[in-house]
Length: 194
Image (cartoon, rainbow, N blue to C red; front, top):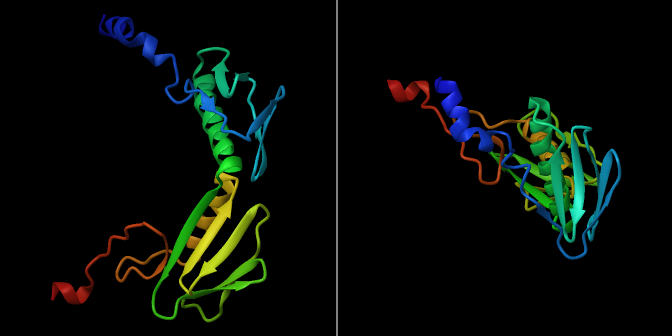
């Protein structure tokens, strides 16, 4: 009885993905080519191809993209929001681009440009070389700031996470590689308890 009342009251809101139903506005200079299994988004900064699952369809209405799903199965609802998020990220990437900034915190920690890649010194016996990644541009500001830029949100984020993983911030002094606005919670050492 309680379940029936719940669905009678809230049932309409449950069946629609809150993220998936939002239309994606195409800015000036950005175009989308919709095919059966993929959508190609082109803009001033480049082009990206997003795969579309069978459970959802993408349509263009004037200067907006609308994602709809074919049924209300659990997998279809998940894909609905996913495809919409990926398309929104692609539109933002080809028009504005994405950027992640990493900071090196620690005595002697530094980064230098090495061709298209970078070389990082973070307390190991040798510098760590980061090879260039296709679709991502590295730049070094000063000796302690690394900028990672590109049109793919996934690629920029994963590359930044890989570099941060070389020396994640340690919990006592906070030394390591961190995101620009990351707050690192530090623990008190043994001497603090004495």
